[in-house]
Amino acid sequence: MRVVVVGGAGYIGAHVTRLLLDRGDDVVVVDNLSTGDAARVEGAELHLLTVTSGDDAALAEVLGGSDAVVHFAARKSVEESVHDPVAYYRDNVVGVTTVLAAMRDAGVGGLVFSSSAAVYGEASGVVSESADLRPINPYGRSKVVGEWAVSDAAAAYRIRALSLRYFNVAGAADPSLRDHGARNLVPIAVEHARQGRPVSVFGDGYDTPDGSCVRDYVHVSDVADAHLAALDHVVAAPAGYDDVLNVGTGVGSSVLEVLTTLGEVSGQAVDYEIGPPRDGDPAAVIGAVGKIEAVLGWRASRDLRAIVGSAWTAGVTA
Ligand code: WQD
Image 1 (cartoon, rainbow, N blue to C red):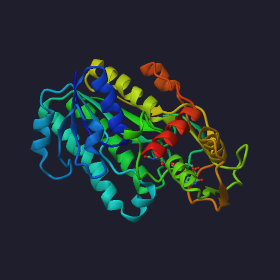
Image 2 (tube, rainbow, N blue to C red; image 1 turned 120 degrees about the vertical axis):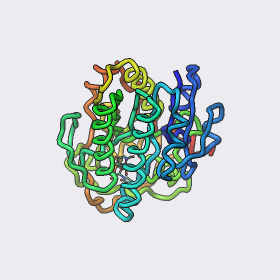
Image 3 (cartoon, protein in one colour; image 1 turned 180 degrees about the vertical axis):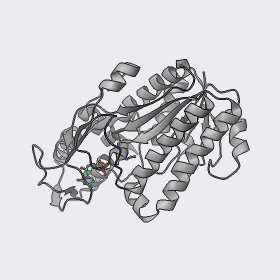
């Protein structure tokens, strides 16, 4: 099929682009390269467009004749969103509405939208898709609004859509696709370990087995596999189809387990220091994965060692 990947030169988008090209799909990448990298998407047709530029007709032209769109292009830093919320509402909300309008105008039927576990806010434990949406920062709120826009457009324009709520995505299929510049635990830990600097652990007094926070780390290659299954699902779904799915492993790992695993895969113990807890950090957030298994027949196949090992290799050879 012909798939347009908006934000396809970014971290997760480039992994999906690679898999789509590998399976022989016709892949069109739309990206303004603000954080993306053209070298990641060699082999795909690349259009340098900013979806929030106001030139909506240009996007509709690129979308013409496609079967589906995967929309990644967005900002993803919780901290940045607190300091510059308008940038998040513009890029994340105006971005998806522009894509939806272009899909309507070009008659494109299928959409997979990147959402986030940040929509659940401080929910703790194993979180299912039916949990209340209580985002606690502008990033999470921009994703909730994005999901609403997708649902409303699916109903009105007869689009078939899935919103995927990612948990903690990390790792890399190969070093060229690594997540450079991300301020998340795994890339920070790899960077600090390489430089011999201690990693700051944000609190060890949580109600978890070792006192540090527990998250659901999912390998970016598994996340990319889930997108291919989601694309196949939406193009075959009835008009107006719309649903949300968690993309996680259903397994929680603590900050200290991540650092121990990094020590094992790198062959050098990772130095760390216990710092104060970070505002708004829930003790444990793990995705319930029964729904995505039932709907897409997808489940993650790579464990924490594979995630951290691939991030380490990508960081060392970068
Ligand atoms: C992971 C764990 C920290 C850094 C957020 C968004 C989520 C997704 C990913 C995506 C936490 C601890 C971290 C450090 C630490 N966003 N930590 N020392 O906060 O779980 O999730 O990013 O697009 O939607 O909410 O991710 O990687 O910041 O933290 O101890 O230097 O690592 O406390 O427990 P988080 P994170």
